[in-house]
Image (tube, rainbow over all chains, first blue to last red; front, side, top):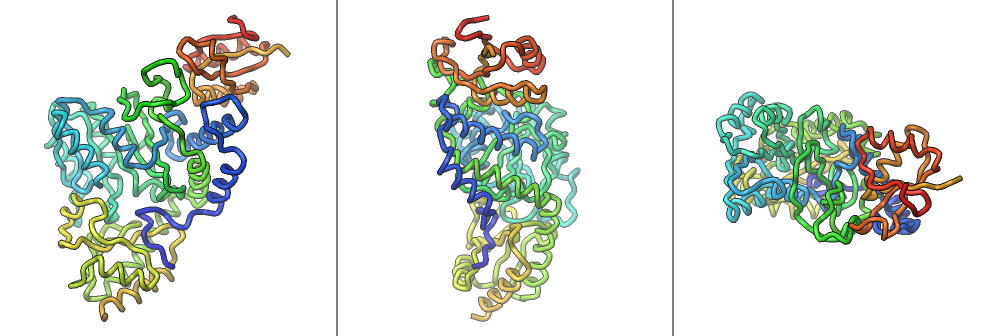
Length: 381
Length: 77
């Protein structure tokens, strides 16, 4: 099997991830922060270690600013709904995933919150940070409270200039939220140097952890409302959620085995070296482009943006059919709209969406040779 | 060795305090405080050698880690 759907979730996972999850389930999987017994304390230690590993990886000096969630979607919902109030205005880019568009749209329907969509200019060959920031600047209003922007698109390898956008936001005291679903573990991120106020990321994609974990990293003193209230093991006699971070935003039992696994995944990414991963995936992109662009019927979208994600179509064959045939050849790819209708509209893909292949650290050139052969077969079928 | 306790709050904040003290070569254990210690309910802290009490107070204060109580045995200091 050839796995080219790492943008959905990474596969395979490192052996150390699997081994630590098994060890956790077998030996120390108590409920952290609830009891005083050895298993609860051991689980709490492992969770804290995971916070430290991630904080260090992202250039944050405070592990308690890492708040664990189920996934990026949950983290974005906390950030968006926790900050925005009635009367606020928010900007999002035109390549956002539904995990940004949908919560923003939902609160705009019910809470007197307005939103606008700024152009990412991804289809422009020579787009610059200045051009993008100029577009954002024109759309800012006196009541703009937040800008939410993907770091790297989930349907192509376009990267947004987050450092420049953050400078613009901070001049106007606007909170800057970054969706790092496709960049965490694929390219360097330094929360402080990049000027990110809130970063939302999954544990199960580039960071090589299992499904069921993600996090928010909060780099600013922001009074976030809670999305979910419940038991968190702190100040249990109070009706309100405790003010202690991160427990305030972590109601319910934490996914200890998943986070034990994530801890190992991040360590593996560190061992590979994030710059090495980034360069390697760009090389895979170049090799895939060289092969697929030689097939006349293949149209590749935004080929100038090189990274871990490639979007293409085969003329006259709907994307779902292409992926079904790829699956028959033992190749895993994803068709359709990738939970990103806004981005597909921006890239002007057809009615059936497109085929997305996405690379990870365990893909090889041989995978791309096989993909090339399979696409040729699809074209001649 | 006489044991003392410092009541901090959440288990995360207590682990953070423990790591900080380790940097100053002060050993401590994370403990769940007795339920009667706080009017707000469940709370965590650190147990340590009482001889280190003054140093610990200063280090935690200077690092911004809020302490709700210091206890010796089960009694407030």
